[in-house]
Image (cartoon, rainbow, N blue to C red; front, side, top):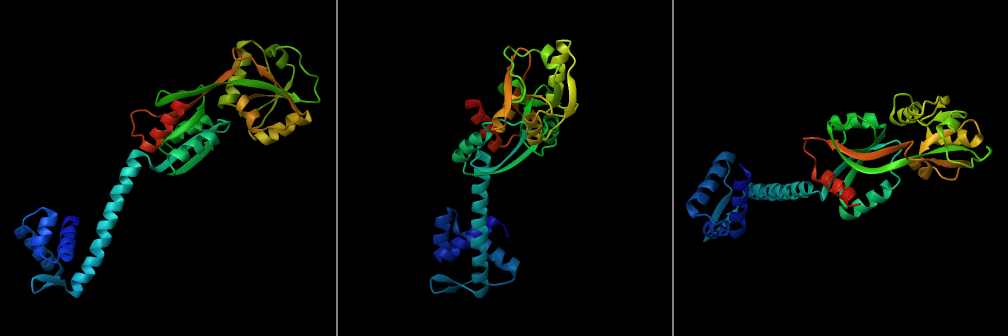
Length: 290
């Protein structure tokens, strides 16, 4: 049996006459009668019996009718859900976010949820280069990453260019002039990343560009601990603006480094020349509008 035969059977049961069922289904009577006969032969059971002008269900017919209703209802629900997933009103948003994420992300997700309340979420946090691998491996469809990175395999939506700040404990003497790398090399620095990763590379590259040599006394990817260490006067640090917005209330001094000397681009990426779900497309479109 197939779904079409089940629909035919439901029409025969509910109309109680082959002629009326044929009109309802917009087919002629002979093929409909043949379908009923084929089903009875396949199942080895009589499904309907004639009672005067009308058909009545046998016990076997009652059992089949019950399941036929379930199957056709499930088929309709499946079609509806696939259409909803296809247009992005229902589905799953799989998103990777950088360790130093976009401050406005909760607000963006709230806005997206209002537009698409039936969407569920899979959010993974990691370092940018690893997020690129997750997108390549199709573990997540989208990722918010910090550049520079090799992004030849990806489509990129630029979100923002972010400044960096030099931060010290409030116990330190305040700076009264623009931050220079010549002066920063005199401070014991704890970098908010580990060697080989994006922010670490950006900071060292900036010192190298100005032919200065930073005094790096440590690396700390645990941002809460880093802020505690800086607050206590253990060392100073250089951090992206997002980090300060996400970790407020610490007794520190912060000084913006001119963007011409050090800044970082943040972008949304997805894999080139691969299928992107409608849910993911809707999220990309929302960020484009913002």
